[in-house]
Amino acid sequence: MPDLCNSALASGQLVALLPQYQLEDLGMYAIYSSRQHQPPRLRALQDFLSKWFHAERAQR
Image (cartoon, rainbow, N blue to C red):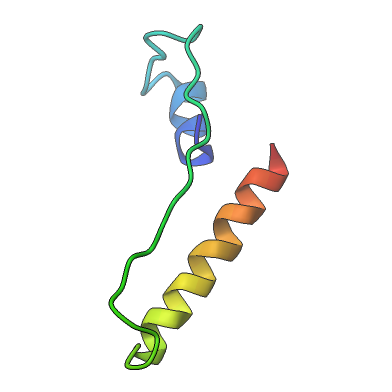
């Protein structure tokens, strides 16, 4: 379960309906036309998301 849901589950705001079923980790891909004309803010977003998802996975 994503960390952002843990507090809501703990407080009872959310209820796990099928706790015996866990989703497998899936890859995430960024698709864009070319690096040649890539805006710096797009590259910054890709770098941020990559680091964030790697950190999330490392905490498990």
